[in-house]
Amino acid sequence: MQKFRRSGNVPVMRSALVRYHEIALKRGNRAWFVEHLKKNLSTALRGMGLREIRNASGRLLLNFNHDVPPEELTGRLSRVFGIANFSLVERTDADMSSLGAYVLETLQGQSFDSFRVETRRVDKRFPLTSNDINRELGALVKAHSGARVDLTRPELTVSVEILPSSAFVSLRRVPGPGGLPVGASGRLVSLISGGIDSPVASYRMMQRGCRLIFVHFHSSPFLDRSSQEKSKALVEMLTRYQFVSRLYLVPFGEIQRRIVAAVLRPLRVVIYRRMMLRIASVIAAKERARALVTGESLAQVASQTLPNIAVIEEAARLPVLRPLIGMDKQEIIDQAMSIGTFETSVQPDQDCCQLFVPKHPAVKATLRRAREAEAALDLEELTGLGADHVEIERFHYPEPKDEHGLHVA
Ligand code: ATP
Ligand code: MG
Picture (cartoon, rainbow, N blue to C red):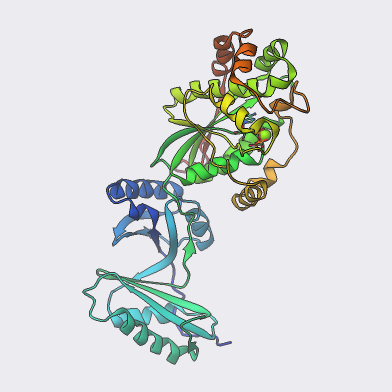
């Protein structure tokens, strides 16, 4: 293993180059998407000394006032939807001698036996072709390090990007989360339980550029507050992807008590769900959201058969989006693990849907029977019992701080 040494200081990273992907394809709307991405980046990087974000030939160049801790910066950027990948870089002048000196400086302290140089010449006016640059810098690195060039499976890839008047060197491209910038596709109301599925459904809609308002139904005082605490913990995690969230906590116990008094056991879950969608629709209208989101997955549990889904949906005033509908449980669990919600979701809780329901609910509800059951209920009053008595919790990420660096409530 070669140890590459050279005198001088280790370069500090004061810039990042962010590459987007999908948003570049949206031709007519591209400027709009890029503006959203820039706004989200400045929120995500709050408190890190971000000086400016510049458009740089189909990429975004982020410049910082001072050195930034690479792990913190990498963590924050990897949660900003719309980023295809990014590199922590340092800017240098776009001429071969500056570039050569800078590449050698960047490689200080790196150990590698094989390498390649990979250049993208965005500025076609630069006098050398990408291949010429690769060859010239490759020869330089080889001479200083003794490592060999390996174009197919190198231990280290030195990436060079030549933009008008600036060049950037980086050793690592970090994958971003892809998708579209949060906020660019509009607002949705997401029904979040304390389970595994609804946080994953929420994540997938945020990845499609939606901003979510969360709604959780709880049965206190009939049950303890564990499901509320879980929903708060989950929303806090999901807020790292959309920066601000509101969680509506809806008291559902009294509504359930009234349903229990009027509806026979097998239909209760379906009637509970219809009430949830009615209340969520009222909240969505207030929040100017365009659709609802649930974590339903076809036939995963008895209440999620096709006939039941159709009967439940009929009570909603907006489209119901179900991003997990065709996924199987293991795929959902894998994604919950990768976004970090799984551990919290599997903690035991007292979920409102356990209250007064049979072990074997109806799997083939019909609209006629649901309406017959609801005829004994004052639906408007029940909707008001939930929608007019909500508690709202607010979440921010990163935590806003005042000028003394203290957290602001
Ligand atoms: P999850 O893992 O998301 O709890 P689940 O597999 O337990 O889903 P259900 O209990 O049938 O399935 O719930 C289906 C969907 O209904 C949930 O994904 C969620 O969107 C919504 N939902 C269920 N219970 C609640 C609740 N207490 N508050 C808000 N939404 C809920
Ligand atoms: Mg559940």
